[in-house]
Amino acid sequence: MPDKYFTYKSIDDLRADVAHLGVDISFDEKLDAVFQPVRIGPRTIGNAMGIHPMEGCDGTIDGKPGELTYRRWKRFGDGGAKLIWGEATAVVPEGLANSRQLLLNEANLPDFERLVKITRTAHCERYGTDSDLMIGLQLTHSGRWSYRAPMIAYHHPQADGVTYVDKAKGVCVDASYPLVTDDYLEQLEDAYVEAAKRAAKVGFDFVDIKQCHTYLLNELLGARTREGKYGGSFENRTRMIRNILSKIKSEVGSPFQAASRLNVYDGVPFELDPVSGAGRPIPFDTPYQYNFGVDVNDPLREDLTEPIALIAMMRGLGVHLVNVSVGSPYYNMHYGRPFEKKPFEGYETPEHPLLGVARHFAATEKIQRTFPDLAVVGTGYSWLQKYFISAGESNLRRKRVSIVAVGRGAIAYPDFAADVIAKGALNPSQVCIAISYCTNLMRSKNNELGQYPSGCVPRDDAYVPIYKDVLAKRKAEGKT
Image (cartoon, rainbow, N blue to C red; front, side, top):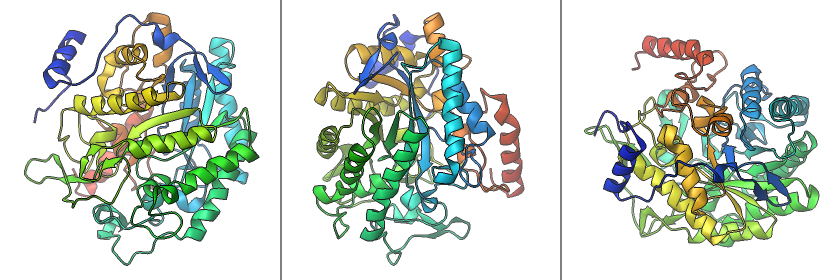
C-alpha cells in the first residue's frame, strides 16, 4: 500500500484517479449551488453548507461546555455555514462516551443556553442576522461504547470481542454479559424527550436523535437476535426511534424539529492484519444476523431496503432533515472517515480512500433520490481536502444531496464557508489533511480528567501542546 494517497497537484490529477478507480465522484469548479438556500420543513437556511457533529471531548467533568467548547462553537458561528449540527450530547450519565462528553441535564441548561447565544452572536456580528441559521444538538446514548460500562442491546460475536469491559486488562464483553432491559429502554425514551424539551428551551432549532456509528439506537436497528419488544422484527427494532419521535412531535411541536443522523450501512467489524498492517474483516458467517443496512448474504455490501423504510417512517413522524452516515469509528473507521494516516492503535486503510468517499456519496444519493423533498446532509468530503467543495457543488447540481457538510474538515477549518462565500474557493493551507490527529486525541484517556480534548493539531496551535503531552505520555508508557 502507498505511504500517501493524496498526491494530487491539480483537480485533473484527482479526476484521473477517480476514472482509474471507476467510482462516481465528479467536480464542478464554478460554485453556485452551495450558495443557494435550502428548505428544511418550515425553515429555510441561507446556504447549502453545514458542519457535522464532531465531538471536542472538552466539556467539564459534570457535562457542561468547557472553554474550548465555547471557543469551537463561536468559530462555527462565525464560519458562514448555515447548518451547525452540534456534537454528541448524552441524555443520561451512564450513556456518556467519555468523561468529558457533554450532558444535557437540568443543572447544565444555563451553560447550553450560553453556548447557543455565543454561536448566534458570532454569526450575527459577521453576517448581520441569524434568521437563516439553524443550530441543532445531537442527543445520544453510547450503548456498548459507554465509558463507565458497556450497555449492549444484543450479543454480537464480532463486536463483543472488541468491546472492552476493562481495556487495561484486555477484558471484553462475553456471552454472560447482561443486555439492557426493555424496561430501561422504555424509560430511556422519556429521557430523550426531556432532553429535546431542554434543547428547545435554551434556543436550539432541532435535536438529532442519533442513530449512527454503532451507538445504542443504531445498535437496536440491527438487533435481529434480541428478544422482546425492541428486537427481532423490523417493527420492534424501530420501536424506540418511532416512540421518541412521536413523543417529541406531540410534546415539543413546531417550529422546533427532530432530525436524525442515521447509519444507512454499518458494515462489519474489521481487525488489524498483522502481516500487511491493513484492516481486514473479522471472520463472519452468513446469513449475517447483525448490524443495519447490510446485505445478509454478503455484509460487505450495502442493502438500503430497511434504512429507506425507516426514513419513510420518520418522514411520517415529521422529520424533515436526515444526515446520512456509515460505519463505526470503533471497528471499521475507514468506512466512516476515509483517512490518509491511521489513528493510534488502528489499522492502515484496506482500500483507496476514494472508494470510501464514493461509498458515502452513493448511499446519500440513494436516500436523496428516494426522498426528493427531504433535506439530506451528505458526508465523506473531508478527505478530498481543497477539492471537497467542488465535489459538493457537483453533488448538489446532480441532486445527489441537499446540504454539503464536513466534520473533521470543520474542526480544522471552521470558516471554510466564509472563504467560499468571499473568495469562491477553499484555502489549501487550512483544509483537513485526514492524518487522524483529532482521532488520536479523542482516543487518548491517560490524563487527570480521563480524556484529552480533541482538535486539529496541524491547523490549530491551541492543540499542539496538548498533542505533545499525549505523545510524551505514550512514550513513557512504551507505546508508539
